[in-house]
Amino acid sequence: MPASARNLIILHADELRGDCVGFAGNREVRTPHLDAFAGQGEVLERHFTVHPKCVPSRVAMMTGRFAHSDGIRTVMEENLLPADQPDLMKTLKAAGFETAVFGLNHCWADFWNGNRPHGTVDWHSYVPPFDAISNRRIPLPPAGRRPDAPQLADGFDLHGRLAGELGPFSDDVRAESAIHYLTQARDRSKPFFMQLNLSQPHPPYQVEEPWYSSVDPAAITPFPSALPRNPSLPFRAMRRHRTHEGPIEPAAVREVLATYYGMIAKIDHLMGRVLEAIAGEGLFEDTIVVFTSDHGDFAGQYGLGEKFDTVMADCLLRVPCAIRIPGRAGGRRCDALTQHIDLPATMLELLGVAPAAGWIMHGSSLLPVLDGRVRPAAVFADGGHEASMRARFNAGLWHKGRKATAGKQHTYHHEPDSMARTSMVRSETHKLVMRETGGHELYDLAADPWELDNRYGDPAMSGVQAALMERLVGWHLRTVSDRPFQPQVGA
Image 1 (cartoon, one colour):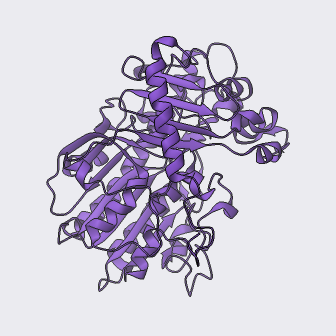
Image 2: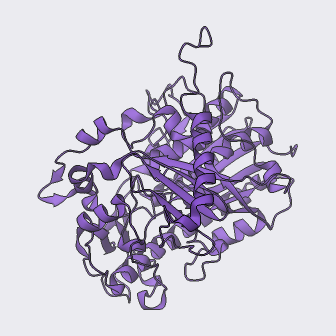
Image 3: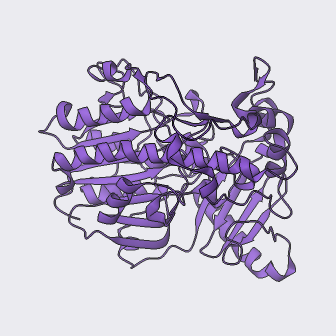
């Protein structure tokens, strides 16, 4: 462990694909600040979340546990981490760290409890002095050179140029709160944990100038918009209810992706301001800094926008991850398979803090992987809901005659089996997806990196399919219901 690792900062974007940053090789998106940061740290080139939805992914980053093991599958407030379950931030707080989380919570059930005295976290966006920052409104500049994006029906949720003003709790004021904490408010006698959670590039696809006009839709390369061969029900249901079943107009996916890239450019700008504050405070000398996201986004791929709970495509599960660790050489890249559940064990080892008693983690320290001593064989993910919940989930949820959340709830309600429980195993070369209600998937990722040729049941793939199935069953046996039912007797 580097002796100088004293603090931990997690910089977190929402819904950022792993292939949509410059340091991942994308030359059409502009992320100079994040690229510079990644160049001074270590890049995890094939890093994956464990769930294609916000809350389960964010919780896994704190607990080091797969979502299905704790039943955390939705985004509802009742489905957050209970106060008595150990996690990374609470463990650091118990070890004497000051804790601060700015922006979205999406993790801790008692996060806002009483403000002062505080709940789970010492500082957040709505305690003084940060409440005044969070409530600021910011006027927006006039239109630039790029024409307003056409409305592409509810399914893409494309709003285009954002005009007027930014309301309270915008990403701008969240970043400003983080900067104020780092430069003014923190207790310099204590080590600290800070997490900044920005909302973009989460849809609706919209961003203000100059970011909106910074990307020319005609100059970018859209992702493939066709559905896979032998598509599973979630793909077919979303195309029926969110966009449409026929071919997708190329101009549509260009407009969506251009706006998504503009949102990412803005995130890079805001993260750049925070990174500048970190450098100005001299914190890179004794602070672990992580940049990542909770999950990805279709961004026009498969002719879809946003995400879906039971789609296990790399565009949703692979996320960017760069880590700068004091005492370790920068400029290194790791192409091994890694996951969000590995982050808590890694951070605790680097900080020299023991896990809380009774904390069962599925992940393990990444340091042997970063050093090339270990190469994980596979990563795993899951999603979806049991039959009883599918029957009632968001039933009939409409708002003023318009399909809520770009038709997602409409899809849930009319095709509930599209939300059936789903599990995935991904090796370096192949992916298997199993669904409770059928419609399984198998991809040869070496030959088919866009996951367009579903070869489940293909006799030529029988050996690969059987090996992945065995690996998937083994994962479930290791991780399902591994918490003691009666802790007092260990049963």
